[in-house]
Amino acid sequence: MAIVVVLAGSWLGYQSLAADKCSGQIKLTVAAAPEIAPAVDRAAQQWSSGGANVNGTCVAVNVTGVNPATTASALALRHGVTLTGLPPAGKSALVPDVWLPDSSTWLLRLSSEASGFVPTDGTSIAQSPVVVAMPEPIAQQVGWPDKKLAWSDLVAKITTGNSLRTGIVDPTRDAAGLAGLLALGSATGTSPDAKATQVGALRALAAGSSSLRDDLLQKFPRSLDAADLASSISAAPLSEEDVVAYNAERPEVKLAALYLEPTPPALNYPYAVMPEVDLTKAAAATGLRQVLEQASFKNELAATGLRAPDGTVGAGFAAPVGAPQASPAAAKPAGGSEGAAAAGLDAGALNRALGSWAAITLPGRALAVFDVSGSMLTKVPTAGGLTRAEVTRRAAAQGLALFDDKWAVGTWIFSTELVGKQPWKVIEPISPLSSRRSALAASIQKIQPKQGGQTGLYDTALAAYKNVQDTWQGGRVNSVLLFTDGANKNPDGISRATLVAELKKLADPTRPVRLVIIGIGNEVDRAELDAIAKATRDGGVFVAPDPAKIADIFLEAISSRSGAAR
Image (cartoon, rainbow, N blue to C red; front, side):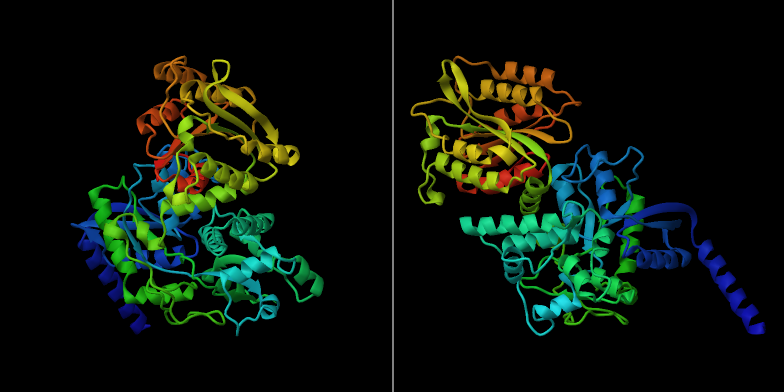
């Protein structure tokens, strides 16, 4: 009893001394990915109780475990943008002072849409490799743990038979799912046959997709019964931590973690200080981050199934069979900015992957409008001498193949005087792909330039916008996708001022129509295109100075909600 009294007195005395060192309170809110939040909270509370302060003012830290998609939606709302696939956040959604998502891809997606979203720090404080999770009996059938597999092997198994029932957490809502999507895409190549293989793999993944990670985990087999194994999910991209946590529950059928080559970007847990934070809170945030970089935190991470940022593991880490002793270290954020380099990716790559996913999984209506002015006969040196029109036809055919049957698509062409004085011509009205795919594929071949034709851009843009709005359907993304390689030149047409004024009058938040303009080559007038798109409130401009890259720009345009030159 005497020892207890002495120890208690010592503790109370320490608390008083610590409290004497600071006064007042700086309240620092942290939203952390659920798997790392408990470890961060323990470290934060220990730091606070030990007298954490900024210039004599005490620091109190409130750590909350929040799904990164939820925080991303709240941040998107604050900055007036939306992210593909994420439902809009409620107006009461809270934005933290510090955001600790599971991946820098969230920061990249937000910063590519919202120019005002410029978080600081971005230091990685943990890591978890992205693996393919398989029930052990299934993994043994493909050679695990002795055989080293590649992502191309997985693509082949997905697309050439029914031996694997694949699943994925919706990549628009889950960073591990997005990493898996990127890895699968890079494993297929860029040839026409490879693109068809990629589409097949994406469709197979979409068939077994889940909105939440917990939902997907419930789809793995619960017993060794042959029927259960055959009817359950047998492969899905997840994080190493997911596999560790799943197996910690001692299921009858454990999951194997397959570390496929090439290694996809790991979840890197960036420590992002929000741009609205004042200097005092920013100093407190720096102090907390320094605590999370201490050697003792590595063991805290190990207890939750996570690695240190350098890829090594602390004491007690329950490594899956075949796991590397150390995975590649997370890259340092470029220039101390928002951690953009830490994922080893750029926003364009993310948007192309998400654009492919959106085309396959989201229902939509799109009117594709193609420039057939004489300048579209210009040859593209980087495309083997193909003309701009030929490059555009190829990109359109690839895009049409990607769109799911849930989409409805129409095609127009425009130049000058195509139907009397009218600069545009309807090739196919917006029609369901489920019944008109062949006709729409044939219509792409009618993208043939008019020798000497000019560019009736303004009249065409207005007519196309009105057409989609007049036939608007709820529950779908209603879009105009307009491809052009030049500025408006139509002496018989309306002026830019008239077009902008008419579009502003037509814009209706109850029937939103997204006008996406894709500029081909370096002869487009970016200011002109921006003025047109902005008049619709929900438009975007994407410019491909090299027309050979128009297919990539097209995918970015489908995914992104704002315009960007590439």
